[in-house]
Each structure stands twice: as C-alpha cells, then as structure tokens.
Image (cartoon, rainbow, N blue to C red; front, side, top):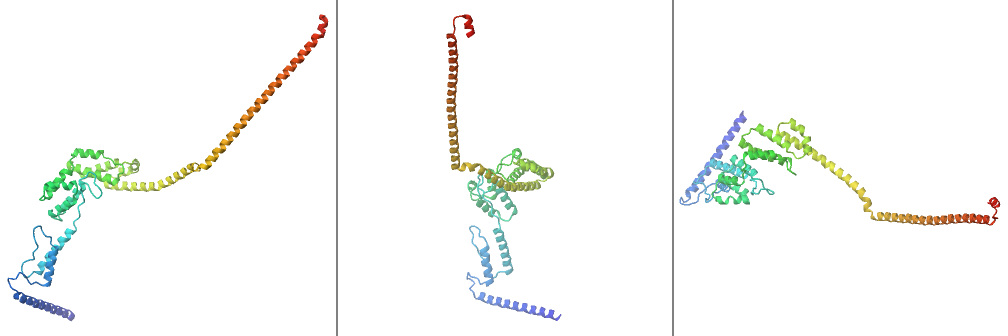
Length: 369
C-alpha cells in the first residue's frame, strides 16, 4: 500500500517538474518574441513546430495556380497540428493506394497489355463508386489509361471536360449498341471457338448475357439456368461433353458445373500428354524399322546385282537347253527318216527279186509269190 502511494507521489512530482520546464520554456519564448520587431515578417516558433510545418508542406498537394502558405499566427496549436498531419498522412496513403486503371486504346483486338472497353469501363465504375478519389484525380487517371484512338476521341471535349462528359463520349464510341434481342441471339448462337479455353468461352457468354439481362430484367435464377445450359451445349469437344453429361444432369448451378468441367478437362489433358509421347515413340520405332532397309543403299544395290546375275544364269541355261533340244530333235527326225528309207529299200529289193524270178507261168509265179 505504501509502495503504491510512493509511486503515485513520484509521478505527480515528475509531472510537476515537466510543467515547470514547459512554463519556463514558454516564458523564455515569450521574452524572445517580445524582443522581435512587430513589423518583421519572420515569426519565432519552436523546433517541433517547424518540423511539423515542413511535414505539412511536403505532404500537401498543391492546386494549380496556388502557392503553399504556413498557418498564420505566432503560436501553433500542437493538437490541431497533429490532427492535420494525421489527416494529411491518411489522404496521402489513400492516394498512393489508388489502383492504376488498365490501358485501353480503342482497338477491336486489344494488344498485349490492353483490355477491352467492357473491362476498362467496369474498372472505372468500380473506382468511381468506391469514392476513394475525387473527380479531379479520377479524370487524370482516366486520361492516363487511354492511348491511341481512344485518347484522340477526348480532344474535341477540351481541357475543361468533366468525368461524366468523358465517360459519355467513350460510351458512344466504344459501348455496345446492340439491342436486347440481338444480344440474346448472339448468346444462343455462340459456341466455343477453336483454340479458345473454357475460361474465355464462359466469361464471354456471361458478359453477353449480363448485358441482355439489363434490358429484359431477368432474375438471377433464370440467368444462371440459361448460362449453364448454353455453356455445356456450346463446348467444342464432343468427348468432353460426353464425359461431363452426368454433371450437367445433376448440377443446377453454373459456377459448380463450370468448375467440375474444368477439372475433367484438366484430367483429360494430362492423360493425353502421357499417351501422346508413347504413341509417338511407337510410331518412330515402326518408322525406323520400315526405313532401315531403305537407309542401307549399298546392301540394296548388292542384292539387286545378285538377282540380276541369277536371272542371267537362268536365262543362259534356258537358252542352252533349247539349243540342245533342237539338236536332239533334228537327230531323231534324221534317224527316223533313214529307218523308213531302209525299209523301203528292202521292200523294193524283195519285190525286184521276186519279179526277176517270175517265169511267166501263172501257176509257178503264184508259188513264188
């Protein structure tokens, strides 16, 4: 208990001393101020007050045509000064945290680093509704984000154009002018394009349907059902549609269906990546086997020469056989002719001998014959 009393007494003594020191310093400051010439344009301030004023000057943005001036008066309220510094620091922090608007050039096909007018307009509306910056700062951010034809469109408006005038001008040049019926027809006729991802296809469908809904006042449930049905039927890959048919029948929420279809697509892509190298390797091996004889041209030429030599030998043997057969046939015919001639000679000789022995007497001749 005594320790608590002693501690409280010590704190009171310390505070009293600090107050006396401040009073002494203030008294000395008043004496110095009194010695200054009242007509002098300089003022006497403390070191702390000077540092605070310099911080205010460094952190306060200047308006066009105006110069910075310190607060009037020889004394500065420390509490008010600190509050002003806190507010200035807060404003400066908010200004530094302002997101940069994306670049828009007005081209039908945005280049790298650019966005479409729909995306750019959406970012501007979000920043404007947040009320983080004033219209003056927002107008400068808009001008800095435009380039090319989109920036040239603002020139006729002049340098005094407001945010509303700038946005109306850009909306007239680059905003959608299609009717609600045309937007719905575009939505229902749309399909996933070649080399287009599911994310791009789904976001494009949702953007078109959102604009059409603003005219028809379709509720969220009907919008989600239309988007879910058109997205699945518009998928380009028939194999992916067949693999996800059960999801389409069971899931009634577009976001859930979209997420699950992306998972299936990723799994199919991974399987394709592992299957294609194997098939390619097998194809290369088969091609190597087929192309191997054709690559060894010397062996092929040697084989053709051997075949030609064999054909020549066979042809020579055939011709030699034909010659021998012809010669043997001639000999056979000659021998047959000679044998027939000999028989005729013997026949004629016997006839002649019989004719020479004939006597003229019929009875005797008959006996001889």
